[in-house]
Length: 289
Image (cartoon, rainbow, N blue to C red):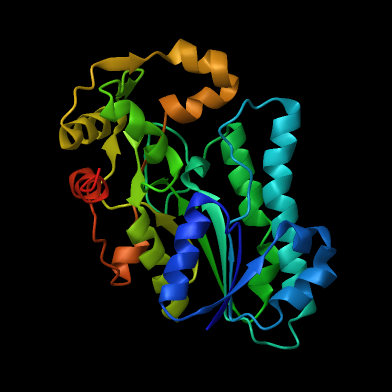
């Protein structure tokens, strides 16, 4: 199978690319230069693709000033629109089967519980970005292909992402919870993430919105305790909320608040998580640390 992927240089993109290659697929890497060439250039790049996975997007964990907000939005909405236009240009070929577009669980209202059927969405900047990101694929609904929108939680892996940044501190006994630690921590093991994407590709009935998070979310406090326990280190420190606000401003809310999100649709379709709770996920990830 030929799979075109954007955002393949990031933590998630690298891991997913390796997984797909090891599964016997051929990858078509969509680069920044391809996007810069416009929709006609992109159409040529993706012409032979059976599947498109769009992971492109600048990091949201930065100060949300006017400049960075524009970057966060354009790196998602503009690139997605270009890909959609390229698919439309190629639609007479009718080769593309599946388009998987990224979103995030930041679309949901914080401090509430959600599955894919929840309509209680947030009103902050991150929720606004996610709504616009998802709407950018609206024109694909008229085409003969399956559109899957993946709302991603915190992806845990040791080769990148938040866990890799935390490990040196926790190993040194300097780890700790963020603020009260009571806020939800909705996550997915990188292995389950890759397997879930493969499920969406090969299952001909999969379409629509999917939360890519494990069935049993935890809290930041419990995540901290479990990680420290498996590393056999104390975790007595607390990162104060005011310090995060000094560094990240409005964006600090991403670290101090959250929504309790679960995946209902994947299990309903027969997908089985290998790491359904924080204990099994951390035990696997730090076994060689």
